[in-house]
Length: 205
Ligand SMILES: [Zn+2]
Image (cartoon, rainbow, N blue to C red):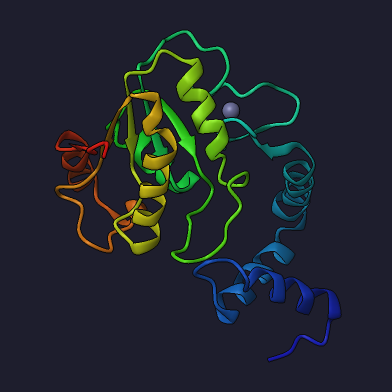
């Protein structure tokens, strides 16, 4: 059913682009916003503007941060604790899953994607050069490659291994306990924990 209000139809169209929201739920969300104009719609519109203007991806560690401050979330700039491990993940959602499970304490490096097999890709975009620098500049003892057990994830893992193996650092991968085709984000804490605990060294050949 069309509302015949162009603004509302546009809003519904945009909301239906959200993951997991079809046209029907998008309509419900739009109506809810309309019903709560002052308490939800107004602050939400401001929040969207703020996020759009102020939140950026850190060009060193790949995490998101506010434009105005230096990256701080146990990441690339100053923090109180010093870690000797760095965990490479595909995306923010994966990092959050690992953080919320209290599975790993150390630095993170968020690639922001994967290399699809056989495709040309932008090494700069995946922050691989930055990862090489971080490994070199910090006294790290181990790089844990926590990419998914998908073809893309594994292709990416191989590429990273090749890129950092000359720095003679210990490289490990989440192998056992990780189901083939498994995406990190979809794993339960128990599986992820055992995948971390049983991580295997990557042979430098
Ligand atoms: Zn950073």
